Length: 362
Image (cartoon, rainbow, N blue to C red; front, side):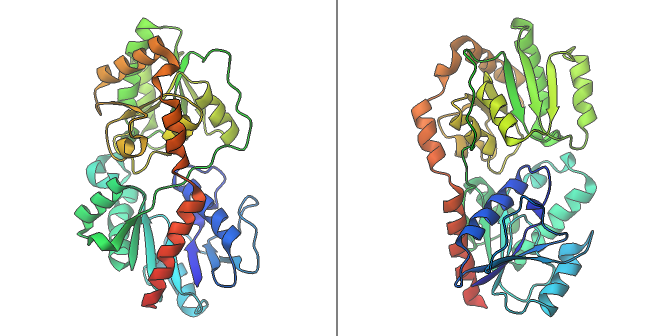
């Protein structure tokens, strides 16, 4: 099988969310590439230094182009230059507008159906229209969770056997984690600053916590998305300017250090298609308080503590409960077993099986 993959999401300096998903898959595909299973990774620009190394059966194809790359430039290359490809894998919703071979598409979440006002109009248009075309055109669809699968079936009227759930993987950090003698006085949030991440609820909840325990702070790790200025206005109105700390994007070592020493990780998103930060916290024995929404209960199971979606009082009560009862709240043994269920090697091999089946239509 000769598989082509859109690798652009991985070819960025600051990887978050889907970028890590594509990057980890490419690493696995590079390891298993062989005469029987070869890969061509399509990029707009030359690969960054941290991308997997090329080999005889794993190489990059640079197709220059900008705004409509997947709609125009990529299809032209597929039809004119790459006739030996057996299947094309789009790991982040958007598939080539025209594709001469069977197509497999991965869906991460469909939050844009439920919270359309939380997206920029340009992004919303592509998510709604480009994803719909990609899913309808696909030979097979991959969903990262049962939640995403159910939503895809409902919104796109897909047959159950056209979509398969393949959960994301998880890779423990390669560095030594340093735990402070007693956990630090802060809660942590990891994610892009944007409306659907439900930061407003988190900030109001933290305000209640801070009123009772003023020594506690909230650390927010992540890039600024759109409408992030609204977050700063809320902080000012709640008089939390000196108690909410923004670190911006951080590398993996610093991220794990923050999670390891946090009182708890808060995952408040209005809708998440998976919830990888929860697994990162489970690995570091850090309690997780998550919204009872999307795929979060599916991934966190009975290990995380859940709060009602926009109920900041409920969230603050659960944050205070962790402060007063400590880390005994997490089921450490259960958390470790849960994390073991997710590996990038297993994810990649499951996807490879789906890609091979799709080639039967070629």
